[in-house]
Length: 331
Ligand code: CP
Image (cartoon, rainbow, N blue to C red):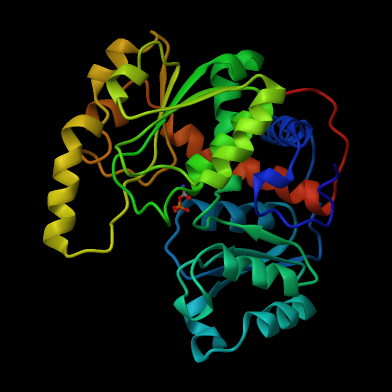
């Protein structure tokens, strides 16, 4: 399937070959094997954000700039959206000025929380809309993560055992990265274990989709509430940030402490993992919360390569939507 002119919102709309092509293209761009410096010449993008971001915001701004285009950062709280201008009008009007909208604003209560706001905007925009994280997906992050795994393990990265964990998070809002990773893994035939405390399960709709895809791709996707057991023989231990749950500061702290002993990543987990296992984290990381500093700053950690790869992945995504070229090599 061609990504040309398409929205980039949910990896369930892609094929395994789309993912392979994006990873291969990101690697080529990173290596300097493809010149993309004019690929977005004359194009202007809006980054519509109402939620904090360091990596996603910067990597898109720098990618667009290095591809010859212009990116305008739009704080959603300073647009007429705060005065209840509709997403329909916002999408229509932005389409008259821009070539694409990169969106992270799933917390805007006026418009229905979560995916619905992004989807309404996309349905009313006549230009591509890219998901820069919502409550369901973080598709751009996962392209960078797969590139990072390929760099560390070579073409056999899909057969490596990836343990993806979170200890504490707002279930309905903060599982975008694991959802996207699970979908990608199911399409690509990967080996993934999702480890999390009871009560923090993934969305059943995503689980059903991945089970169906995994049956075709021969992916192994499993779930456990025992992190220590999951890390046995792991090649990647990936942790997502713990996010505040909507409760008082005291209750929030107490809830974090309750799960910390069982869910915080430390060298004990890497003692059970394979000897060349790596630590991945989409960041931000609070040392001592989801992971101890001994791991974050230790020799297994690839967190800064992973962060850098956001830039190369964004370029591959933008190039595929705006200036596609065939890339035949499998990732
Ligand atoms: N990983 C990630 O999305 O980082 P930011 O929130 O800083 O963009």
